[in-house]
Length: 82
Image (cartoon, rainbow, N blue to C red; front, side, top):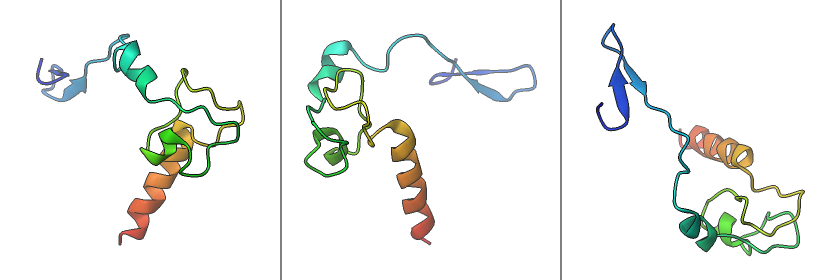
């Protein structure tokens, strides 16, 4: 295995998947918002750090700072860079 990848028979690299969480629960809980709105301003600690909201976040269920929204914003930023 090479840095999280393994070689297939045709010598292509395949990422190794895992069921482990991306970080220890204590670390994930360190960055969590407590917003009472939809997390669209930089008052949201997650949005301010350019992180998606996670399960420990205490924001509302209509949060607009999920992984899909962040991905769309990053993609549009890349497109505007020219």
